[in-house]
Image 1 (cartoon, helix red, strand yellow):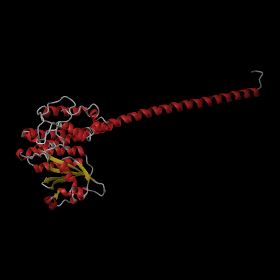
Image 2 (spheres, helix red, strand yellow):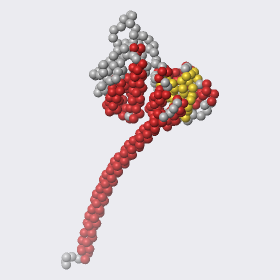
Image 3 (cartoon, one colour):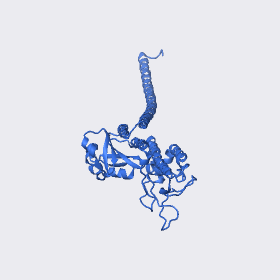
Image 4 (cartoon, one colour):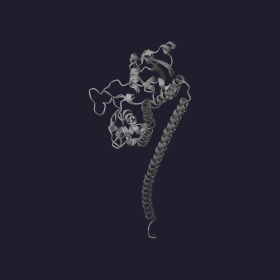
Length: 377
């Protein structure tokens, strides 16, 4: 170093400084890249964690909201059913039916059936119905949807037009949309349609149908049994127990002189109570009443399954396994029906199975799934 000139030393220091600077720059660049990568990875991880937490929280909040809604609807229905029990006459039943159905439909009209006429006795969310129209009513045959609901004793969905509902009701229940729909729910008292609830707008069908079933049961309790009408068989060649939609050919041997009809026996897929084949007229009055009560209970049980298991039924229908989707509810209903009806009468029909087929499976037994045990008799 002592022999080096000042200029050489200065040049050497400059070279060292340049190398040091280059190394520092490279190190800084490397550190910046490492830091940015680490930060990006950390941010991504945090975002994924946060997204997962948000999704979980959202799902939990949605589940809680759904559960709360179910509890609110169930409590409202329970309160309505308790109120039905304490009503002293038919007129308050129809008013309560309209009130209780209002949360599940924008517009509600309850019309009583009087012979070949129907007349409005209660309404909610509807304005402009004249007193004269309420008093006089309309001919059922002039309103195709009303006539269908009365004849079939099943809910009907139709366009809110004059030909389907009558002109006055169509103006009240329809809206500016040409395809506005109306939902008609019959109210039955011992197999007779005594009233029809017509709903329009945003309609949730299951609770309304359940309330109509409850109203029918209350009216039945108010009407003396000796005044109740039992629907006679319309043909000696066909079995027609009130409440069944499709006549069934009689079972067993027949002759030209023997035109008696028999109670239908569904296909026997599992051991069940013994079936006593007798014609409807051969049944005692108590047995006939038990059959009619069994039909009503079957409708109520299936309506409850539809009300409380809407999402599960949708998945089960899509998968072709309705029974697997709501097995616990169907098994509970089957056990109750077996104990309450099938075990008490040898003439009883498995109306619960028929209602499950009609209301849940749309008469397609394949939708119930391979595990469905079939009719109990």
